[in-house]
Amino acid sequence: MGSGQVTSSEPFDFQGKHVTVAGLGVSGVPAAKVLHGLGAIVTVVNDGADERARAQAAELEALGITVRLGDGDTLPEGSELIVTAPGWKPDKPLFAAAEQAGVPVWGDVELAWRLRGPDAAVWLAVTGTNGKTTTVQMLASILKAAGLRTAAVGNIGVSLLDAVLGEERYDVLAVELSSYQLHWAPSLRAHSAAVLNLAPDHLDWHGSMEAYAADKGRIYEGNRVACVYNADATDKPSTEDLVREADVEEGCRAIGFTLGTPAPSQLGVVEGILVDRAFVENRQKNAQELAEVADVNPPAPHNIANALAAAALARAYGVSAKAVRDGLRAFTPDAHRIAHVADVDGVAYVDDSKATNTHAAEASLAAYESIVWIAGGLAKGATFDELVTKSAKRLRGAVLIGADRGLIREALARHAPEVPVVDLDRTDTGAMRAAVQEARDLARAGDTVLLAPACASMDMFANYNKRGDAFADAVRELGSGEG
Image (cartoon, rainbow, N blue to C red):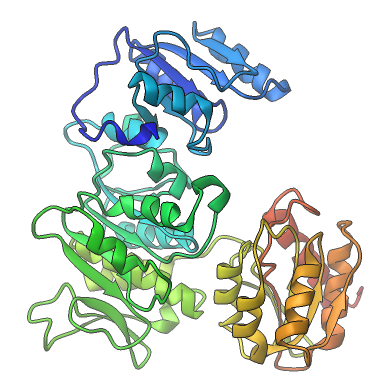
C-alpha cells in the first residue's frame, strides 16, 4: 500500500502543497487544522455525511478548508500527500489510487513525527495486542517519579500532534501506538520500544496474522537503545522474532521481560521482587532490585508483565531503580481493567470489561484460582476453544450473555463439560443484573466472580465502560442487600 513509499524523515515543506486528509473525527480534524496552519492547501474527504460529519465539515470550511463528504474513495486531483485517520483500511480505493499516482500516505503519528522540532522530546513507544494503555500509563508514572517532564500520548490521553506542537515542553513521551497507527508511520524511529504480546486481532483490517505482526514490528525500526520483547511469549511470530527482523541503529540491544528468573539482558521476577539484569554493570553476575510484586496494582501476572515492560523502557532511558519503584507504587489503573469492585459473602467481584478479546480474557482468567466467569458479547470472528481449554480447571461456573454467547457455550460443552453454565437468552442492558445474580448463586466463599467477556460490548452497551459500570452497579446492589 501507499504507506511504505516515504521512509526518510527529512523536513517536509507544506507551504502551498495539496494535502488530502482522509477521514474526519478524532485525528482528522486536528490534522486538517494543523496542515492548514502550515500553509497547505487542504482537502478533507470522508465516507459518511451524518450530522456529526456535517458539523465538523462546517467548522473546517469556516477556516477555508475544503471538505468532501460521502466520498472517501476518490483521490482529489493534484494531491501531493495523504494524511489518513489510522482506522482507514489499507485496501481502500483511495490508497490504491495514491499508490498508482506515487502519492505518499501518512497517518497522524507520521505527521507528528515529521513536525517535531530540533529539541523534540524522546519517544518511548509501546504496542501489543493487550496491555498497551496500562503499560504506557505505568511508564509515564515512572518517568514522572524520576522528575522528568512527560505525558502518556498517542492512542491514549494527549494527542501526539498536541504533544509535539503545543506550548508545553516535554523531556520524554510515553507513546501508545496501535497496529493501525504503525501501518501508516513509515519513518517513525523511537529511542526504545516494546511489543508486549501478539495474538490474532484486527485481522479483517490487516488481512492476515503475518501482516498484523509486521505492522506491530514496525515499532522497532530504527530504535537507538533498546527493543523490549516478551521472553515468555509462545505465539508465532513472537515479539522476539520481530526484534530479530528489525533494522535498528548500531548498539541497540534486545531486552527481554519474563515472569520467571531473568537471564542476562532481561528483566524478571525473583522471589516476589522485580529485578533488572539488563541495565546493570556485569549483568552476567549482578541484578538490580526494582520493586516488589506487591508494588504493582493489581499484581495479576499479565499486569506484572506490563510493569516489567514499562520498567525496561524507563531503564533504557536511564531512570533509576528508585523511580521505577516509586512510579509503580503511584500508578492507579483505569477503570474496568481487572478492577476489584467488592467482596460479598466471601466472594470477590472483579470487573475486567476491557477484556474484549480472547487473549485479554485468558490473561484475566489466569489471575484467579476459582472463578465464576461472566462472558459474552460480540465475538468479532473469534473462536473460544483455546481459551476454554487453558482456563477450564479454574472455572467454578459460567454465566453467558450477549449476541454470540452460543460460541462460548459450545466451546465449554466441548472442553469443560463439567462446568455448570447459565445461558441468559437476553441482550437488554438489564441482563447484567441478572448475570451477577446468577453468578452469586454459583459462587462459593473464596471464589472470584469475574467479568472478562472475551467479546466486544456493542450488542448490549455503548462501550466496554458502560458494560463494566452495569456490572459494578449490580454488584453494589448485592452488597446492599437489594439484589
